[in-house]
Image (cartoon, rainbow, N blue to C red; front, side, top):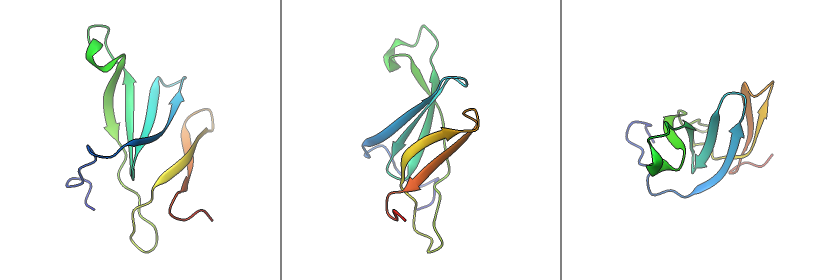
Length: 89
């Protein structure tokens, strides 16, 4: 799965976490972690959130995509820790 060719629009959101200090919300959709920020007050279409970016798809040693789960912000919300749903060890 090349990040540029991967279509994540059909995937359901499975988990989210909010970084209050950085005004960012992280939402997991399959192997993709999307980042949202607070939208301008005129942008009511997205209910207060505006898309900011998405993380590159991480891969394990076998070149399979990692599916993030159990997100946790660490080190004053500057780092994210998560498990791979495909490999719970």
